[in-house]
Image 1 (cartoon, rainbow, N blue to C red):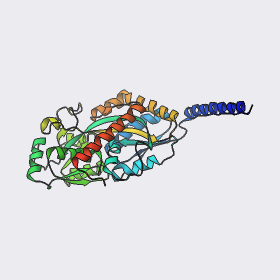
Image 2: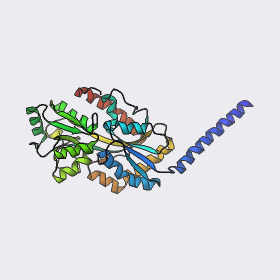
Image 3: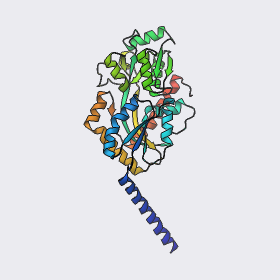
Length: 324
């Protein structure tokens, strides 16, 4: 009799839990949602978040607020997101740097594979190798020749130590056998500002932050870091085809939530984000900026993050970068 009662209570609890989860999905979200951008305003990650959030707000029926938390090459914002309540009201606009940090830093205040639940990869984009117009080079080959003639005299900016733009440049230097001075910034926006001012002369910038300045003539583009040319600027060759065969470095962005966020909330967020990414105006906006909308499943995104973590660990070792 006691066993039957216990069994009945267990069934009732399971039914109640399932019903509660359904109710949570039906009422979610009931208040504004925060999306943490772990970089400064005006950078590539921030631009992507601000392209997506207005339409995501419409679909969720609640305001989605962009919360910029730059610093430490995105580690500060990532930590805030990882330690936020897993209630569906804090999202992270993650950047590919999150897969680089495990090999470029000795200690992290979070575990990217353990402390986050993937929702979807939003976009993927190559970087663009740009120089200040005062630098007397107009091609990748000319940059390599100049850097070889002036070892350690040229400097390059990045969004921070261990970030994708930093590692993209380190990969370039390693493959070409060059030496330059790295100047890290707290995000790509301040790095671009100093590049425009000529305080640094080289950078692998995100397409979203670099292309507008290339089109205005304030920066000179030498090459696209992806395996193929970008449809947004097809006239710019790849780095591989103009001086460094085999070179490829791509940057990606995606939405994560704290681990233990209810699956029904993740499913709702995934559904709405994919719908946003597939909407014609958003899709065209990204393509015109040199980014490809993705919108994969949480499971596919999780596998991708693991593969990227392994890939960049090899790059860090090959470039001889010591963990900080």
